[in-house]
Length: 191
Image 1 (tube, rainbow, N blue to C red):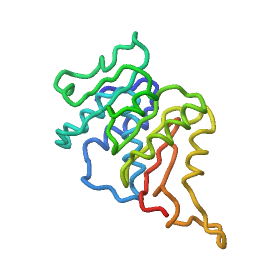
Image 2 (cartoon, rainbow, N blue to C red):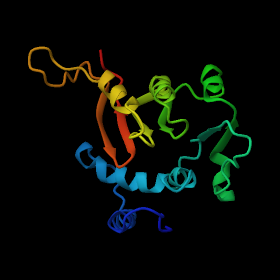
Image 3 (spheres, rainbow, N blue to C red):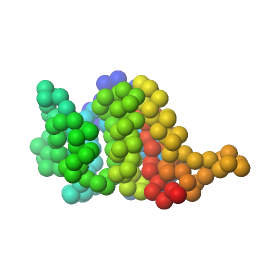
């Protein structure tokens, strides 16, 4: 692993040490250590997601990357051996969301495009529908506006009598924020 510019030394060492001992399953209470490692990797480029797919031998999994700007070299840092699972799409995310070019069921959605309140909230709502049970919605730059906390609040339901979380009607298992990155784990069985 290369050192990530701008990442504090203690987080870098933690991510590097965690990569040496990767447990196969992580209980919910330990998921944030894994999320911190994952976030450190996301801060570099999509190659890390593709490497994770390869390491886990998920040969049929794909990473879809939507880029509107024609000047952006999509996937320029991805090594050739990881490219077969990379699906670059050029155009507006709104157009792809309406078409059948994106999968109807996904394991993870990573927002790192326009950071306007309206666009972020739209993407969260749109791709939340496609996430499977246990799927992860990840957003970069959640500090830019209130879209992320508002979205999390909309997926949360409290019991009217106790004021505590109503697990039967809340549509996420848990959520959190690490630095500028926010995470929400989807729960399908909410009523």
